[in-house]
Image (tube, rainbow over all chains, first blue to last red; front, side):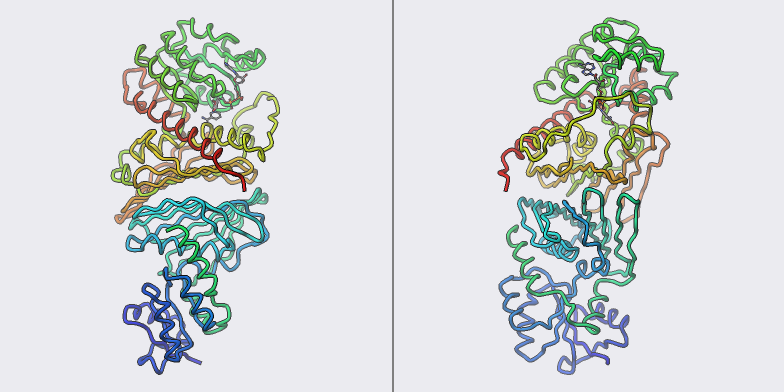
Amino acid sequence: MRTSISVPTQLRSVATALAASLPDFYSVSEPEDAAGLVVLDGSGNWVAAAAEKLSAGRHNLLVHAPGPVDPGEVDTLAARTSTIVLSEPFAGNPVLKNLPQDIPFGAVSSTALAAPETPVERALLEQIRSLRAAGFTDLAVENAQITATGALLTGEARHEQRLVRVRALVTRTSAVTPHHVLRAYSPEHVLTVTLPDPATAAPGTATLVGPDGERILPTDYESAHRRTWRLAHESPREAASLRDFADDLRVLGSIS
Amino acid sequence: MTGVGLIGAGAVVQTIHLPTLARLSEEFTIRTVMDTDPATAQAVAARVGAQASTDLEDVLNDESIEVVAICSPPEFHAEQTVAALRAGKRAVLCEKPLATSHDELRDIAEALAETGGLLVVGAMHVFDPAWTEIRPRLGELVRSARTVRSSIVLPFNDRYESRASHLLPRQPMSMPDASDPAVRQAFLNAAVLGLAVHDLPLVHELIGRPGTDAEIVSAEFLEPFGYVIGIRAGQTLVEVSGLMQPHWKPLWELEAVSAEEVLHVEFTPSFVPAGSATATITGAQGAFSVGNRPTNGYEAEWRRLAQALQGQTDAVPSSADVLADAEFVVHVADRATALLGEQVPA
Ligand SMILES: NC(=O)c1ccc[n+]([C@@H]2O[C@H](COP(=O)([O-])OP(=O)(O)OC[C@H]3O[C@@H](n4cnc5c(N)ncnc54)[C@H](O)[C@@H]3O)[C@@H](O)[C@H]2O)c1
């Protein structure tokens, strides 16, 4: 069954393109009342907008590229509903779903090149989110250096019950399209994950180097947003949790 | 033909300098191999038909030796460099690190000023053909880089050394207990002076040579042997990391990102003559790439020393830059080690 979606003007072209790549699932419609799914722009105070929509009886909500908001408000929202989908530009990349989890990583590094117009705070949040999606959770930041154009963090996270040293570097630049590179190190393995520009369907890649040589994990030519939109239709329960998002916002709050 | 004396004849001489000098046999000839261990001195000297000695004075007093290469352990570098300069040698090629303290650097600076000798530090990436070719194009990346990242992931040296030459037997190294905070500090210091040192001169140039004004903001030791150091120089953030572990794949990168350009350099591993790095600058106009040259920085450092001896003084970095870079290295090592010591273990 096709779901009609309503989108704010600024997301119209993005949403139209996404819906066109899932023609059996979605069609962009007006007015909102007729829509089965309401898309919110994650660049503003999306949490307030979502609360408003809920109060107006709109229960199926998707936040496109959610940015930093107040974590307490996200908790409040999470207590009210479990049907909000977060469509995240990097953390939603399909490559992150099939990473090997049984390797005893001791350190992970993340390097993010962000668009010049992306605030450093948002770029950092996206980085923390992609680390979580790769299995590195409960980040505790020990040292943070923030400038107008970049950030450098060191700290500790958890991966499968083990403590892992974390470092992250963010730079705003127009030189290349935005992307993230994660590298996780264990005594015998190095896992390298690249998360491409979410505006393209260039696949994220994961490469595992170990005692037997090098293995490239399967690639999937689906953008993070398309994957999230597809799953929102196929199996909505797989959506990223608002509570985790609130936790990651608290990590961000501990830095800036 | 320029006569060379080698001081210290361990792994770096056997795997790097002898094969490199063999390729430059029209420029250099090794006259004496000096090592405090007589068996090593003799065995290495015999490989190249040179004299063996256990006495530094033999090299210093031999007038047919114009260039001294200092390849002893780091704690002897400064003292031997000063001795060679003061003995009137035309040039010293000192393996990295040039010095382990600011005091040692002061002595070297004085000796350089008084003798006018030439000093080259064997930080081979400074001489890597790809770095040499990309340098004139760095433009706004120098000083206005927003972030700089030096990242070294390497298998342990034995993977390469044994492919570069037949190594003489060595005393097995005992690994001290890294759970001891003092041992971790010593490891971190050694890692900066021994491994990070390769790229710190390049990092220093990219961030506008702030020397000891650069702030070391974080430092940690990584198991089994590695480090992550955060540096802030004005608005530029620098991450310097290294990790040695048994896995096979080397990845030795240097990256600098400015508002409009990204520099990415990938170096080949040490010891083996695996050719030059590749260096790419990417920006709105596309990418410009150099490298994949058949030779590496080891050969270039000797070649450029030969050119400098023939009067082309700009073939090698100026003494001022060499000293400033070495001050930066010592500063990073000292401050990172002190910072690690201040951290209370959880
Ligand atoms: N550029 C590179 O890629 C590279 C690679 C490895 C080592 N190095 C540098 O080369 C130097 C030597 O390293 P190595 O791996 O050959 O070490 P090594 O331990 O294999 O060899 C050192 C040699 O110096 C001798 N020695 C000790 N004290 C001496 C003294 N006072 N005078 C003369 N000789 C003395 C020892 O007997 C030994 O043979 C170090 O400074 C190291 O940092 C550089």
